[in-house]
Length: 170
Image (cartoon, rainbow, N blue to C red):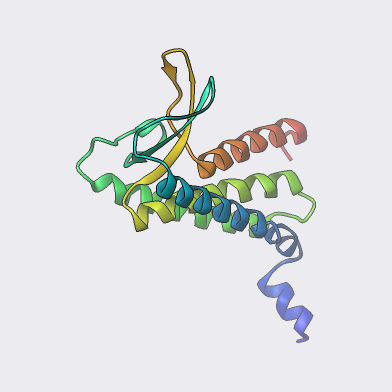
């Protein structure tokens, strides 16, 4: 068996193409962790720093999930969300491995979701909460604070929907 045959057995042809998108997940994790570190070191906690009339930087710690879901629970939610993020990340890597190289939109979308999940997973393991700092608002209405990882997950999910609509049931 040649070296190429061994590689083909471990990583089928399509897998090598889709796994190359892992650089995007790594870039999301790096950008997410850098911006969270900057926010944690330079922003006062829970004190808005206005950037525009509708955007503030406001450092908050989210012990829950999206929109602070379960943030008032007694602490067990940290491990639930840690396990979910780890499990979803494993599923995404397996999904990427099976994608054909030409499924670029889907691979990019999955890499964005993976990077976002890993960025927030790191926070949960290291701090016990997720660092959020981007605060959109209009008059008295505030969208829940979020971060780069949350943005990547949202964009990745939207790209998955667009790709599904674009390609149909393929």
